[in-house]
Length: 181
Image (cartoon, rainbow, N blue to C red):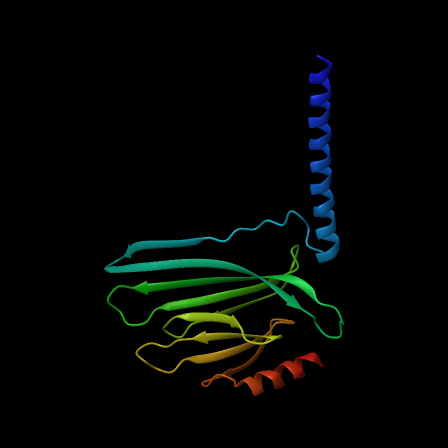
């Protein structure tokens, strides 16, 4: 009987140590990143096929998250932030092109720092981080027309420029430098 008590006490002590280690690790994570833990959010993808009058609509919604490391000027330190991109499209069966939008939000885990919404121009839409401080939204057009490239600041979400030709590496570097000031 004495052996069972010792075994039970050892199991409880081990469980307590594990719980304390997890709690300490979460506290360290919050202290080092500033993100409240556990940080929870969810990403969903949906498709809806519906009839509106004589038209059949194929509606998709997709959300994705990325962790980004950003050093906004005049700061000298980097911080981890959450980038959420939500894509929406509505394609009508038998018609060329379709409606598309992307909504992009940068968050510190508690509050959105900025959000922007960009509408497509009759075709698909893509979004990607192309430099330290710049996000590029590519808007594809209908019927083999050239895409449009829209550039946004990672620092404050403002639209920087819209072009018919994408920026070169050198142009992106110059844009980054201008955002640091």
